[in-house]
Amino acid sequence: MSRRIKIIIGGILLLNLLFVGTLVYELLKTGVIRLNYPDESEFPVRGIDVSHHQGKIDWKKLAAQDIRFAYIKATEGEDFLDEDFKHNWNAAKDAGIVPGAYHYFTLCKTGFEQANNFLTRIGLPSANSLPPAVDLEFGGNCKARPTPEAFRKELKVFIDLVEQAWGCRVVLYSTSDFYPVYLENDFLQNPLWMRNLYRQPDESSHRKWQFWQYANRGKLDGIKGFVDLNASRGDQVQFKKLLHCTGT
Image (cartoon, rainbow, N blue to C red; front, top):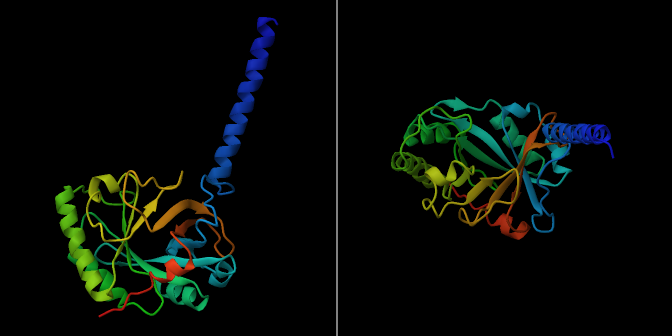
């Protein structure tokens, strides 16, 4: 085979690889395909997490797709209230989807300020709702990076106040880069909600998790854009055991 023919064949193969790579990237970016497809027999309880960014949601359409639960953004920092929280909470319950409220924890404000924002804005739990969750990640956070000791002190204040009011453990949502810096070997009694868009969370690098956020570009009828997809560990019986918040 001549050198020229080899170059031509090599060029064709390279173009094919570039085409396939570009196609796969676009399919991932647009949510047509994703990297995680959890086994439904192993993870039968599926859910989503949403905020005002999802816009108007048709909750009844979501319920028809076996969406069992939804964590709904309530507050952020010391003063932000998600404008769609109350509507989403009530609409989810009306559709038969178990709701849970989450707070985005900023590294720039105290735990007391943030617990006060969360508790005064949304009040106490209603029947058949998930434990409150706190979103702990670097993405979208302020530039402050407190020491682990300082962070844990503020988070403990937040957790203690919310747990005292709600009568149940706060769920800790975290990412693979945040967890080892601020959460490893601490708050071991709190259920863990891990984000991993590439594979099932590896429990050799952290403790056993309760919730797994396995996709951030999910596509579901009832939501026009992308939505985060989640799974709860265990079956329906185990899931119902989580719904025990009593309030004070």
